[in-house]
Amino acid sequence: MSGLIKKKLPMNRKLILTVVFLLICGCATAPTSNEAETKVFSPQPEANIVSHVPIRQFDLASIVKDNKQPILEVNFAKPGEISGVSHENVLKAFAISNAIGILLAFPTVGQSLAFGPAATIGVMVNNANLSTVSRAMEQTDFPNRLKEFLRTGISARFHGEPSSSIKVQLVLIEYGIFGEDGNVMFFYCDGQLKVIDSGGCVFEDPVVWQARKRSRDLPPPRYASLGGYAQNDGELVRDVLIEAAEVMAAAIGKRLEVTK
Amino acid sequence: MRRLIFFLLVFSLFFAGCTATIEKSSEKITPSSYSSYTGSKGCQIGLLRRLLMLPPQYIYMHNGKRQPEEEKIAKTTLRKATLDFLENFRGYEVVIQEESIQGPTDSATNLLFDWVEKGLIGVQPPTEVQTAVSTLSGQNKADGLLLVRGFQKPPSTWNVAAVCLTASLSWPLLLMEQKGYLSADIIEASSGRIVWRIRSPMLDASKPLSATQIQELLGSLERAVPEALTK
Image (cartoon, rainbow over all chains, first blue to last red; front, side, top):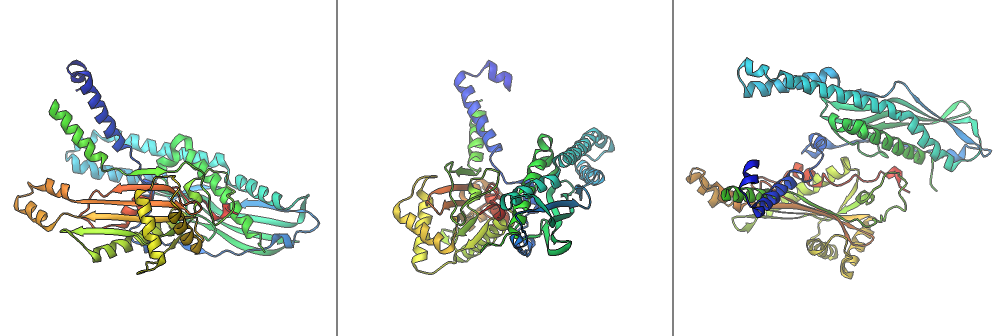
């Protein structure tokens, strides 16, 4: 075909072909919706209903005295993890889908075996993606980012030296990226916010951020595939974690501030 | 070779007509329900986090006549699926404007649907449109107005019968006859300008409107800024 274009077609025909080709390319690259989101979205609205966990407010300023800042603590029970998706899960899902596809398309064992290397490459890509996502999550250090954002918010409200008597504590029970067979993944976090005054807990409120259940002041999660999260050396993982830390810190800041 | 070029041209034009077109204003967006956004991430349309959804408009034509029952079902799907997707997946706060039979709200709604039909992205609207926008958005403390509409014309009964009788040879008639599109526009409440628009043709107008089609229509809309990052 390309040889034909080179030898026989005059310039204007080449131009037409180029325009046609570009038009087709334009169609192929037309904006489409997020594929992972399409998989999560149910045509039945009842299935998409999110359970909102109510939030409470506490006036932190009412207990902070002598121009001192509260102490800030972000603890986590276990480090962030990628759950719901494992190397085995990915391997199993990939093997099953491949086996079905191959059996339908090529009935003989000999032909099926020809696709062995392709399946192996697929598994290797998935494993590499999982490693990239894990590495990006580790590098981003979500608890520390969250603490930084919380510190900025508290420093803007309270000045002076940190006081040892008042402590704002956030315990991250679990956080990470949850996925189902590597197709649909999202950031999740479960925590407990506490305000401690002279050793006694004066305020306690859960921080829930899951796909179908979340605190009223937190936005919906961002869905993407494992490949999407792993792209550009885990760029989306970093984006999502930093954004989550910023939003969560702002939401906590608002819970500890009663506007009059 | 001419045939090949002709085929490619027809093929590409056919698919060019099947793609969605998205337009977005590049000018600064001003929300009305809050005074400032404190997040570090740049946002544009997502700043209009509280949207008032006007009663959707939907025309369903079959055998040369409008079908009120089908239109009612499609409007309900549009309302429910839009609310569901924007709230649970994009983080918008959506307020639904109820449909009135005849009244000032109804005429304002019609005026705005006329405006999004003719108006260009980012252009300052006429005074009466601005008044309608501020009346509707003011009542609901909305940052923006969302207008969703659609048109659907499935193949006529005669053509379906013709395809059956000609053993599917006349299928191009079906393809040529059926038409459909969905569109959504967002108007900024503070200025009345259209700031976001999508027009998407329906690939198969013979099927009833589904929630998935609405999700695909609004899938390219950016996420709303979280309430926590507003003051």
